[in-house]
Amino acid sequence: MSYHESLRRSFFVAIASAVALLIVSCDSEDMSDLLDIEEDPLYSLASFPVGVAVSSPDLLGDNIYFRSLSAHHFNSITCGNDMKMDALHPSEGSYSWGNADFLIDFAQQHNKRIHGHVLVWHSQVPLWMEDYQGTSDQWEALLKDHIKTIVTHYQAEVFSWDVVNEAFEEDGSLRHTIWRDNIGDDYIAKCFQWAREAGPGIKLFYNDYGLSFNGPKFWAVQAMIDDFQSRNPPIPIDGIGFQMHISDDNPPLANIQAVVDTIEARGLLVHFSELDVSLNRNGYYSELTEAMKQRQKERYYDVFTVYRSLPDELQAGITIWGVGDSDSWIRSFFGRIDWPLLFDDNYDPKPAFWGVVEALQDSG
Ligand code: G3I
Image 1 (spheres, protein in one colour):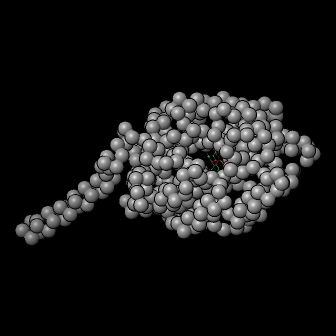
Image 2 (tube, rainbow, N blue to C red):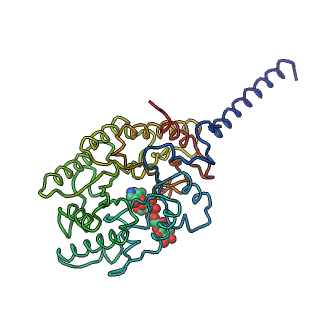
Image 3 (cartoon, helix red, strand yellow):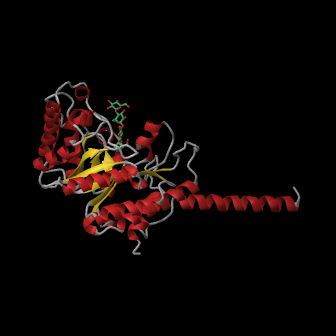
């Protein structure tokens, strides 16, 4: 090999090694001056609860990483599935508390707040409810019993409930569900009233996805709040849950800021209730690149920074919808690879995790 050839080769080897080193060091950035990840919980940096969605299979199985990271970094728990209608009320007249109680024990052992999800939804409804035949009054009695029984059962443990989930379509019209179709358009207001009667001290939320686009669905939610507050007596509602299943490029940050400002102006609590940041919403990618990780880090930083603009008393918290990327609902629901969460498939923290740390530590 000629001298020049060997020089050129060593040059490329040196460049390649430097790039490799850079990638490795970005991946396992030593951020211990920001947070000692073994010692200090993520939530300890925040002025609001930082939560995570957990499900009984995750905690009952042998997933020690899921268990220990949930216990260590988060101080609020939402049941991802175990408090839904089909889980708690599988057959007529009979409730099944076992799995949810198990998660509540876990939360209490580790001193965590419990956010209840969800009293009324059109999805994950037990078959017996879907097949139910009755008059409007009988449907109303069924739903009232469901809400009152559950809110009463968990009155001492659950801090807040998503009372109604996803009642509006994208265009702002009311979604046709068995509840609306059998009880009437006013079923949402009735649900909030029944929840308040059963749990006077419990914070009550309306929860939905896509609200942070600041479009017709969000305007419909505002109209609902106006309606609730203008009645005599007013219909109780304490806050809005923005699910925040967002992606790295959508919706624009200005829209997220605008919806938060709108709810702040109404003096209601704001919960970012199911946050995850998709990197592959169009399914174009099969691998996670360094550039994508950095985009996601910025996105988490921005979302937490917007949230911090709220006054403390309106901060109900931010809940992340899972721990490691492989836990995310997105892969199975949409049938595509994605990496939406703070920890990777091996439960190592991603740059996204450090984006949250930086946002929480930023004094600006
Ligand atoms: O219960 C069965 C189990 O018996 C079976 O062995 C297993 C096999 O796949 O499926 C289990 O049901 C799954 C259930 O999660 C519990 O794991 C369903 O198939 C699956 O569709 C269901 O997905 C949940 C999804 O809601 C259903 O709509 C996700 O875990 C849950 O994260 C997701 O959460 C929703 C929020 O409640 C509301 N906002 C949107 C969010 C994401 O879709």
